[in-house]
Image (cartoon, rainbow, N blue to C red; front, side):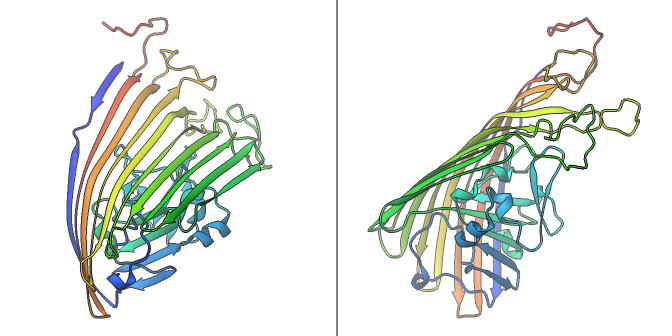
Length: 393
Protein backbone atom coordinates (compact mmCIF):
# COMPACT_ATOMS: atom_id res chain seq x y z
CA UNK A 1 0.00 0.00 0.00
CA UNK A 2 1.36 3.41 -0.96
CA UNK A 3 0.56 6.20 1.44
CA UNK A 4 1.12 9.92 1.39
CA UNK A 5 -0.01 12.06 4.26
CA UNK A 6 0.52 15.53 5.61
CA UNK A 7 -0.65 16.64 8.99
CA UNK A 8 -2.52 19.87 9.37
CA UNK A 9 0.01 22.19 10.92
CA UNK A 10 -0.97 23.01 14.44
CA UNK A 11 -0.36 26.43 15.88
CA UNK A 12 0.10 26.66 19.61
CA UNK A 13 -0.05 29.95 21.46
CA UNK A 14 0.70 30.44 25.12
CA UNK A 15 0.51 33.43 27.42
CA UNK A 16 1.96 32.86 30.87
CA UNK A 17 2.62 34.94 33.94
CA UNK A 18 4.66 34.03 36.99
CA UNK A 19 5.00 35.75 40.33
CA UNK A 20 7.62 34.48 42.74
CA UNK A 21 8.85 35.47 46.14
CA UNK A 22 12.53 35.38 47.09
CA UNK A 23 13.23 34.77 43.42
CA UNK A 24 16.11 36.99 42.19
CA UNK A 25 16.03 38.23 38.62
CA UNK A 26 18.72 39.50 36.27
CA UNK A 27 19.23 43.24 36.26
CA UNK A 28 21.36 45.44 34.07
CA UNK A 29 24.14 45.24 36.64
CA UNK A 30 23.98 41.44 36.58
CA UNK A 31 24.32 41.15 32.82
CA UNK A 32 27.22 38.90 31.81
CA UNK A 33 28.98 38.53 28.42
CA UNK A 34 26.30 37.33 26.03
CA UNK A 35 25.61 33.63 25.67
CA UNK A 36 22.93 33.06 23.11
CA UNK A 37 20.26 32.46 23.98
CA UNK A 38 20.48 31.67 27.67
CA UNK A 39 16.68 31.42 27.71
CA UNK A 40 16.87 31.85 31.46
CA UNK A 41 13.37 32.63 32.54
CA UNK A 42 14.41 34.06 35.88
CA UNK A 43 18.19 34.03 35.81
CA UNK A 44 18.95 30.89 37.80
CA UNK A 45 22.46 30.80 39.31
CA UNK A 46 24.92 27.96 38.93
CA UNK A 47 24.15 25.01 41.18
CA UNK A 48 20.60 24.48 42.28
CA UNK A 49 18.12 26.64 44.11
CA UNK A 50 14.79 25.75 45.66
CA UNK A 51 12.15 28.18 44.51
CA UNK A 52 8.61 28.82 45.52
CA UNK A 53 7.24 27.65 42.19
CA UNK A 54 9.75 25.01 41.26
CA UNK A 55 13.35 23.86 41.24
CA UNK A 56 16.21 24.64 38.85
CA UNK A 57 19.20 22.31 38.67
CA UNK A 58 22.22 23.47 36.67
CA UNK A 59 25.03 21.28 35.34
CA UNK A 60 28.00 23.44 34.34
CA UNK A 61 30.91 22.70 32.01
CA UNK A 62 33.11 21.43 34.84
CA UNK A 63 30.49 18.94 36.01
CA UNK A 64 29.92 17.78 32.43
CA UNK A 65 33.65 17.13 31.99
CA UNK A 66 33.83 15.19 35.28
CA UNK A 67 30.89 12.99 34.31
CA UNK A 68 32.74 11.52 31.33
CA UNK A 69 29.43 11.34 29.48
CA UNK A 70 29.34 11.30 25.70
CA UNK A 71 25.83 12.64 25.13
CA UNK A 72 23.05 14.49 26.95
CA UNK A 73 21.51 11.37 28.49
CA UNK A 74 24.83 10.39 30.11
CA UNK A 75 25.70 13.77 31.66
CA UNK A 76 22.28 14.53 33.14
CA UNK A 77 21.93 11.40 35.25
CA UNK A 78 22.83 13.07 38.57
CA UNK A 79 19.85 15.45 38.54
CA UNK A 80 17.30 14.46 41.22
CA UNK A 81 13.85 13.55 39.97
CA UNK A 82 15.08 12.37 36.55
CA UNK A 83 14.71 8.81 35.34
CA UNK A 84 16.65 7.82 32.24
CA UNK A 85 15.46 4.55 30.74
CA UNK A 86 16.39 2.74 27.56
CA UNK A 87 13.53 0.82 26.00
CA UNK A 88 13.50 -2.01 23.51
CA UNK A 89 14.25 0.32 20.59
CA UNK A 90 17.60 1.31 22.12
CA UNK A 91 16.77 5.03 22.47
CA UNK A 92 17.22 6.61 25.93
CA UNK A 93 14.14 8.39 27.28
CA UNK A 94 14.21 11.06 29.99
CA UNK A 95 11.32 11.21 32.46
CA UNK A 96 10.92 13.97 35.06
CA UNK A 97 9.13 13.27 38.34
CA UNK A 98 7.25 10.31 36.93
CA UNK A 99 6.05 12.05 33.76
CA UNK A 100 7.13 10.67 30.40
CA UNK A 101 9.37 12.19 27.74
CA UNK A 102 6.39 13.58 25.83
CA UNK A 103 5.75 15.94 28.76
CA UNK A 104 9.39 17.13 28.82
CA UNK A 105 10.39 20.03 26.58
CA UNK A 106 13.98 20.00 25.32
CA UNK A 107 15.54 23.25 24.11
CA UNK A 108 18.91 23.58 22.37
CA UNK A 109 19.93 27.24 22.29
CA UNK A 110 16.25 28.10 22.56
CA UNK A 111 15.15 25.83 19.70
CA UNK A 112 12.64 23.06 20.62
CA UNK A 113 14.15 19.63 19.90
CA UNK A 114 10.98 17.56 20.39
CA UNK A 115 9.59 15.85 17.30
CA UNK A 116 6.18 16.95 16.06
CA UNK A 117 5.57 13.26 15.24
CA UNK A 118 5.35 11.76 18.74
CA UNK A 119 6.54 14.65 20.93
CA UNK A 120 9.68 12.78 22.02
CA UNK A 121 13.39 13.37 21.40
CA UNK A 122 16.61 11.37 21.12
CA UNK A 123 19.15 12.76 23.65
CA UNK A 124 22.03 10.86 22.01
CA UNK A 125 21.83 13.32 19.10
CA UNK A 126 23.25 16.03 21.43
CA UNK A 127 26.94 15.26 22.18
CA UNK A 128 28.47 16.35 25.47
CA UNK A 129 31.30 18.06 23.57
CA UNK A 130 28.94 20.81 22.37
CA UNK A 131 27.31 21.50 25.76
CA UNK A 132 28.44 24.35 28.01
CA UNK A 133 25.59 24.20 30.49
CA UNK A 134 22.34 22.30 31.14
CA UNK A 135 19.40 23.63 33.13
CA UNK A 136 16.59 21.37 34.30
CA UNK A 137 13.51 23.32 35.36
CA UNK A 138 10.46 21.72 36.92
CA UNK A 139 7.40 23.04 38.70
CA UNK A 140 5.56 26.28 38.02
CA UNK A 141 8.54 28.10 36.49
CA UNK A 142 8.39 25.85 33.41
CA UNK A 143 5.11 27.42 32.21
CA UNK A 144 7.00 30.46 30.93
CA UNK A 145 8.57 28.31 28.21
CA UNK A 146 5.23 27.66 26.53
CA UNK A 147 3.16 24.55 25.90
CA UNK A 148 4.63 21.06 26.07
CA UNK A 149 6.70 21.21 29.25
CA UNK A 150 4.27 20.10 31.94
CA UNK A 151 6.88 17.74 33.43
CA UNK A 152 9.73 20.19 33.06
CA UNK A 153 12.21 21.90 30.76
CA UNK A 154 15.69 20.76 29.78
CA UNK A 155 17.56 23.79 28.49
CA UNK A 156 20.87 23.04 26.73
CA UNK A 157 23.26 25.95 26.13
CA UNK A 158 26.03 25.20 23.63
CA UNK A 159 29.63 26.27 24.09
CA UNK A 160 30.66 29.86 23.40
CA UNK A 161 33.89 31.63 22.59
CA UNK A 162 35.65 33.83 25.16
CA UNK A 163 38.96 35.69 25.09
CA UNK A 164 41.60 35.03 22.46
CA UNK A 165 40.76 32.55 19.72
CA UNK A 166 41.53 28.99 20.74
CA UNK A 167 40.35 25.46 20.29
CA UNK A 168 40.36 21.90 21.51
CA UNK A 169 40.35 18.48 19.85
CA UNK A 170 39.37 15.27 21.66
CA UNK A 171 39.60 11.66 20.47
CA UNK A 172 38.40 8.56 22.33
CA UNK A 173 38.10 4.86 21.54
CA UNK A 174 36.55 1.90 23.34
CA UNK A 175 35.38 -1.66 22.98
CA UNK A 176 32.89 -2.80 20.34
CA UNK A 177 34.63 -0.40 17.94
CA UNK A 178 33.34 2.61 19.85
CA UNK A 179 34.85 5.83 18.53
CA UNK A 180 34.31 9.45 19.55
CA UNK A 181 35.88 12.65 18.25
CA UNK A 182 35.15 16.33 18.78
CA UNK A 183 36.65 19.70 17.87
CA UNK A 184 35.89 23.21 19.09
CA UNK A 185 37.25 26.66 18.22
CA UNK A 186 36.02 30.02 19.44
CA UNK A 187 36.92 33.40 20.80
CA UNK A 188 35.79 36.96 21.40
CA UNK A 189 36.97 40.42 20.54
CA UNK A 190 35.36 43.60 21.71
CA UNK A 191 31.59 43.31 21.49
CA UNK A 192 31.64 40.14 19.36
CA UNK A 193 32.08 36.50 20.33
CA UNK A 194 31.92 33.44 18.11
CA UNK A 195 32.30 29.66 18.22
CA UNK A 196 32.25 26.65 15.90
CA UNK A 197 32.25 22.98 16.89
CA UNK A 198 31.74 19.49 15.53
CA UNK A 199 31.64 15.94 16.91
CA UNK A 200 31.22 12.35 15.76
CA UNK A 201 30.26 9.18 17.63
CA UNK A 202 29.78 5.63 16.43
CA UNK A 203 29.58 2.16 17.93
CA UNK A 204 28.88 -1.26 16.49
CA UNK A 205 26.47 -2.15 19.30
CA UNK A 206 26.26 -2.81 23.01
CA UNK A 207 27.30 -6.07 24.67
CA UNK A 208 25.00 -8.44 26.54
CA UNK A 209 25.55 -9.94 29.98
CA UNK A 210 27.92 -12.89 30.19
CA UNK A 211 25.03 -14.87 31.67
CA UNK A 212 22.86 -14.41 28.59
CA UNK A 213 22.06 -17.64 26.76
CA UNK A 214 22.04 -17.21 22.97
CA UNK A 215 18.78 -17.68 21.06
CA UNK A 216 17.93 -17.94 17.39
CA UNK A 217 17.01 -14.24 17.37
CA UNK A 218 20.08 -13.22 19.40
CA UNK A 219 22.92 -15.62 18.55
CA UNK A 220 25.91 -13.55 19.67
CA UNK A 221 27.13 -11.52 22.64
CA UNK A 222 26.68 -8.18 20.83
CA UNK A 223 23.08 -6.98 20.72
CA UNK A 224 21.62 -7.49 17.25
CA UNK A 225 20.97 -4.28 15.28
CA UNK A 226 22.12 -1.98 18.10
CA UNK A 227 24.70 0.01 16.14
CA UNK A 228 24.56 3.81 16.21
CA UNK A 229 26.26 6.69 14.38
CA UNK A 230 25.83 10.40 15.16
CA UNK A 231 27.55 13.46 13.66
CA UNK A 232 26.84 16.96 14.99
CA UNK A 233 27.92 20.53 14.36
CA UNK A 234 27.07 23.98 15.66
CA UNK A 235 28.04 27.62 15.23
CA UNK A 236 27.17 30.83 17.04
CA UNK A 237 27.79 34.56 16.68
CA UNK A 238 26.85 37.22 19.24
CA UNK A 239 27.07 41.01 19.21
CA UNK A 240 26.54 43.52 22.04
CA UNK A 241 26.13 47.01 20.49
CA UNK A 242 25.57 48.49 23.97
CA UNK A 243 25.99 47.34 27.54
CA UNK A 244 22.23 46.81 27.78
CA UNK A 245 21.47 45.19 24.40
CA UNK A 246 22.74 41.83 23.20
CA UNK A 247 21.87 40.09 19.92
CA UNK A 248 22.93 36.66 18.72
CA UNK A 249 22.35 33.93 16.20
CA UNK A 250 22.96 30.18 16.56
CA UNK A 251 22.85 27.22 14.19
CA UNK A 252 23.02 23.53 15.08
CA UNK A 253 22.82 20.43 12.91
CA UNK A 254 23.10 16.69 13.43
CA UNK A 255 22.68 13.49 11.47
CA UNK A 256 23.22 9.78 11.62
CA UNK A 257 21.58 6.37 11.68
CA UNK A 258 20.77 3.68 14.24
CA UNK A 259 19.29 0.25 14.59
CA UNK A 260 16.44 -0.84 16.85
CA UNK A 261 17.23 -4.18 18.56
CA UNK A 262 14.55 -6.86 18.08
CA UNK A 263 13.23 -9.15 20.79
CA UNK A 264 15.76 -11.78 21.80
CA UNK A 265 12.98 -14.40 21.90
CA UNK A 266 11.69 -15.90 18.65
CA UNK A 267 9.49 -18.79 19.72
CA UNK A 268 6.45 -19.39 17.55
CA UNK A 269 5.12 -21.86 20.11
CA UNK A 270 5.00 -19.27 22.89
CA UNK A 271 1.65 -17.48 22.76
CA UNK A 272 2.98 -14.67 24.96
CA UNK A 273 6.24 -14.00 23.12
CA UNK A 274 6.25 -10.93 20.90
CA UNK A 275 7.30 -11.48 17.32
CA UNK A 276 10.72 -9.87 16.71
CA UNK A 277 10.61 -6.60 14.79
CA UNK A 278 13.55 -5.64 12.64
CA UNK A 279 13.68 -1.86 12.35
CA UNK A 280 16.20 0.81 11.42
CA UNK A 281 16.25 4.60 11.36
CA UNK A 282 18.42 5.93 8.56
CA UNK A 283 19.24 9.26 6.90
CA UNK A 284 18.54 11.11 10.16
CA UNK A 285 19.07 14.86 9.71
CA UNK A 286 18.24 17.69 12.13
CA UNK A 287 18.88 21.39 11.70
CA UNK A 288 17.92 24.26 14.00
CA UNK A 289 18.26 28.03 13.72
CA UNK A 290 17.77 30.71 16.35
CA UNK A 291 17.94 34.51 16.59
CA UNK A 292 17.78 35.98 20.10
CA UNK A 293 17.79 39.35 21.83
CA UNK A 294 18.30 40.40 25.47
CA UNK A 295 17.58 43.97 26.55
CA UNK A 296 18.08 45.39 30.03
CA UNK A 297 15.28 47.95 29.89
CA UNK A 298 16.01 49.27 33.36
CA UNK A 299 17.83 48.36 36.52
CA UNK A 300 15.16 45.83 37.49
CA UNK A 301 13.58 44.91 34.13
CA UNK A 302 14.85 42.59 31.43
CA UNK A 303 13.12 41.89 28.10
CA UNK A 304 13.97 38.84 26.00
CA UNK A 305 12.78 37.61 22.64
CA UNK A 306 13.80 34.90 20.21
CA UNK A 307 12.53 33.27 17.06
CA UNK A 308 13.48 29.81 15.87
CA UNK A 309 13.02 27.10 13.27
CA UNK A 310 13.83 23.41 13.43
CA UNK A 311 13.53 20.62 10.85
CA UNK A 312 14.05 16.89 11.41
CA UNK A 313 14.10 14.20 8.75
CA UNK A 314 14.53 10.44 8.92
CA UNK A 315 13.73 7.24 7.04
CA UNK A 316 11.96 4.60 9.14
CA UNK A 317 12.23 0.99 7.97
CA UNK A 318 10.64 -2.21 9.27
CA UNK A 319 11.96 -5.34 7.56
CA UNK A 320 10.36 -8.73 7.01
CA UNK A 321 13.06 -10.76 8.76
CA UNK A 322 16.55 -10.82 10.27
CA UNK A 323 18.07 -10.71 6.77
CA UNK A 324 16.61 -7.19 6.42
CA UNK A 325 14.44 -7.99 3.42
CA UNK A 326 12.21 -4.94 2.94
CA UNK A 327 8.56 -5.60 1.99
CA UNK A 328 9.47 -8.74 0.04
CA UNK A 329 7.25 -11.32 1.77
CA UNK A 330 3.54 -10.59 1.08
CA UNK A 331 2.46 -12.85 3.95
CA UNK A 332 4.13 -10.64 6.58
CA UNK A 333 2.23 -7.55 7.59
CA UNK A 334 3.45 -4.50 9.49
CA UNK A 335 6.45 -3.70 7.29
CA UNK A 336 7.04 -0.13 6.18
CA UNK A 337 9.39 2.22 4.37
CA UNK A 338 8.57 5.79 5.42
CA UNK A 339 10.25 9.15 4.91
CA UNK A 340 9.22 11.59 7.63
CA UNK A 341 9.87 15.32 7.93
CA UNK A 342 9.02 17.26 11.08
CA UNK A 343 9.10 21.08 11.17
CA UNK A 344 8.75 23.45 14.11
CA UNK A 345 8.80 27.26 13.90
CA UNK A 346 7.99 29.77 16.59
CA UNK A 347 8.56 33.03 18.40
CA UNK A 348 8.84 33.82 22.10
CA UNK A 349 8.80 37.11 24.01
CA UNK A 350 9.26 37.60 27.72
CA UNK A 351 9.55 40.40 30.29
CA UNK A 352 10.84 39.95 33.85
CA UNK A 353 10.67 42.63 36.55
CA UNK A 354 11.98 42.60 40.11
CA UNK A 355 10.30 44.42 42.98
CA UNK A 356 13.03 44.64 45.55
CA UNK A 357 14.96 41.55 46.61
CA UNK A 358 12.08 39.25 47.45
CA UNK A 359 9.48 39.60 44.70
CA UNK A 360 9.65 39.26 40.93
CA UNK A 361 7.09 39.03 38.14
CA UNK A 362 7.55 37.39 34.77
CA UNK A 363 5.25 37.34 31.74
CA UNK A 364 5.76 35.49 28.46
CA UNK A 365 4.00 35.09 25.12
CA UNK A 366 4.85 32.02 23.02
CA UNK A 367 3.60 30.93 19.60
CA UNK A 368 4.66 27.76 17.79
CA UNK A 369 3.65 25.95 14.61
CA UNK A 370 4.33 22.26 13.97
CA UNK A 371 3.92 20.18 10.80
CA UNK A 372 4.64 16.57 9.90
CA UNK A 373 4.99 15.08 6.42
CA UNK A 374 5.16 11.32 5.84
CA UNK A 375 5.45 9.44 2.56
CA UNK A 376 6.21 5.84 1.73
CA UNK A 377 4.87 2.28 1.79
CA UNK A 378 3.12 0.27 4.50
CA UNK A 379 1.97 -3.35 4.31
CA UNK A 380 -0.84 -3.36 6.86
CA UNK A 381 -2.55 -6.59 5.72
CA UNK A 382 -1.40 -10.01 4.63
CA UNK A 383 -1.80 -10.90 0.97
CA UNK A 384 -1.88 -14.28 -0.71
CA UNK A 385 1.60 -15.66 -1.28
CA UNK A 386 2.75 -15.29 -4.84
CA UNK A 387 0.34 -12.44 -5.59
CA UNK A 388 2.94 -9.67 -5.53
CA UNK A 389 2.42 -6.42 -7.33
CA UNK A 390 1.82 -2.96 -5.99
CA UNK A 391 -0.76 -1.54 -8.34
CA UNK A 392 -3.62 -3.31 -6.63
CA UNK A 393 -6.95 -3.92 -8.15
